[in-house]
Image 1 (cartoon, rainbow, N blue to C red):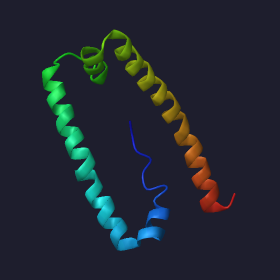
Image 2: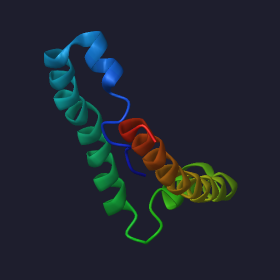
Image 3: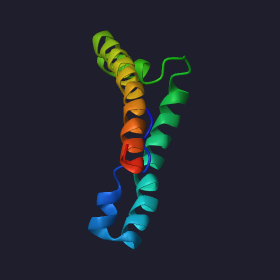
Image 4: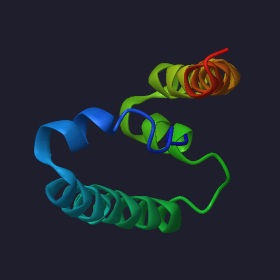
Length: 98
């Protein structure tokens, strides 16, 4: 899925200050995303078929959890895609005073 961008980091800057916020936001991708990327690369080479994490869950836990993973991922995509227009309108209203 995708990230929502910088929306919501205002509290971080208010709490930690601008310097520590920038340092934290610069370090977190390497602490979190780099290991996740390595695991994804390793699993992608171990399972050469198309299907991604649905195949990984299916191999590890069985058919029904694999089905649930696919269904929940699909539902997440539907809900996540519906949130972005609402977030954009809320941001537009807040920034323009409409």
